[in-house]
Length: 380
Image (cartoon, rainbow, N blue to C red):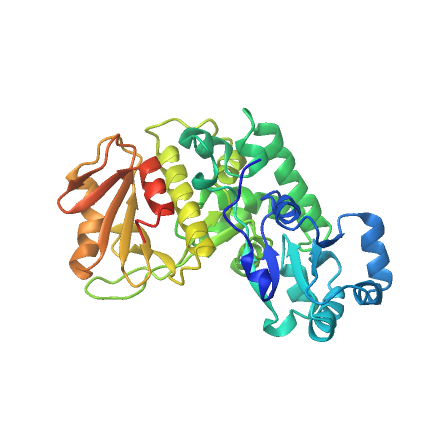
């Protein structure tokens, strides 16, 4: 069994919401970390139906527990009314809850009690390289980093089932969209936009729906944790910059699977997009797990001459991700331009080179070594 970095040590003092996309390993993590906790699994039909009919049953059962007892409610979004009972039990019985789920959308849209700051928010991401002994970069790019997908030789059937389950359970079951065929088309068009700056109007034209609908569709992907936006670094020093965000599916394999682009071939543009996606995915998890309160953004000038894939904090580190096995001065143009405006920034290129080196003051790292440095705390 792989050991996860997230330990949820905050439960010693606070209750927690634990969010994470389906199959990131939330249930396994909770059972591993808290084998003696009181557990309610709302995926079990009988448990869910009992609480749907009578939410007060949770309070009646938990009133028998000792102060400080940890109670886990898995897939809490399936019965939002339970949160009123959780609120009462935290306040009056001193119990600590871990409320896990794959989507906060249903809770938000139903007006459920989100506990008014009485529960901290934690996120479990897909696997990261530091959790995998003998991490295989090529496998990660092709299989993705969901545990069941990374650990199999051929994840195609599992990816098919995963995306099908998402559509059925998150979209159909919750009646989020009226036209499933339009949303399915949108998922593929969004895959074409993966790692790219989002143009809602163009995507709307490709899908045959309004730009307003496309914005709502992207909101659905965010709230069901299937995708995320990477905002632009908008501080203007010299050059005018783009304000629109980039979009990424939550796991590197999702976009390529939707577009039938597997297996990836080194040296192609598609491979380069996948490498960028994986590095951003790992950086996002690192900043969250280590509780580093610094935003992750990208920088792109309006004239399209210069771009930097990742900017951490207030221009503290700027990272360009290249799939080239031999980085040249031409590849450093974006970082040089960024460095002119932010001279204190650490400038880094992640690549397929075999050994680290410096070129014109810019650090060049092989991807696997970069990830080791990142998780060792040497990058940020």
